[in-house]
Length: 303
Image 1 (tube, rainbow, N blue to C red):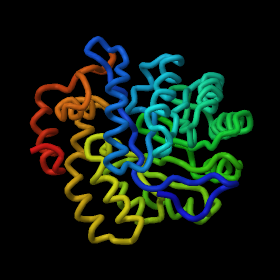
Image 2 (image 1 turned 180 degrees about the vertical axis):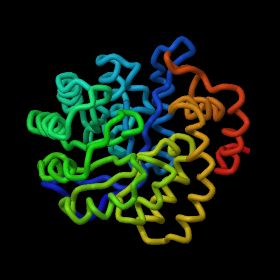
Image 3 (image 1 turned 90 degrees about the horizontal axis):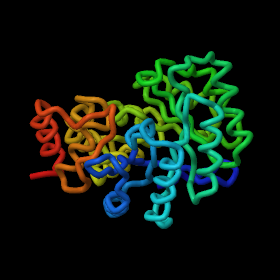
């Protein structure tokens, strides 16, 4: 789905964008047959866009060549059917720049760059980090603010400054701070896209003026997430509320242990991927199998 406006000719993605899990074999090696299966599953289910090698894609456990290969294979398997956004962030500006430069050589719609983690830079450091990459690499770029993982919140004023950079085209905001949407809508350019990065609050985020959700839940229930986002963006709140209620168990259950642990277990339970994950992440603890299955049944993805 695309809104009518574009930024400097760049079509802006809206709707349900899946933060795609990266399939792995039991030994932790990359499973590209499984990746193709997942891509086709999402295209067939109506997913509006794919985020390749984000948090859910285990970006932190992949080296740079692996990250680029996963992005390239995802682009290949999508074959132009829906947009692909490449996760290219990092806590080193030079590493994030290298990843963004290499991803920009592929047929991607944009790059997604997380706030640098662990380092805890100043707000000025954040501005310089993101603006430098935007100036050096001519590709649309989406900011990603997730203080629960980075231990650093990118302040609204910093986002507003960065929104004026031509090829910084939007933000994934995972703060669940819904009043931020109104502030961004007031102070950022009208064609600056706002994406929820938190499934639990994504419907409220879209009702407040957001363009969509970069979703973990969409890994497991892509058709229903697409339908919920579409209804929300069309102003059909009754339908969106009903669908979101059916998805709420997944929104919460997929975070009973650190993402993407429950997501990969659920996808394996659905027969879509092998039981592969990389340390220091581990397979879902047995105590959470039943609640995740219950959430999957409530969402209608298993019987």
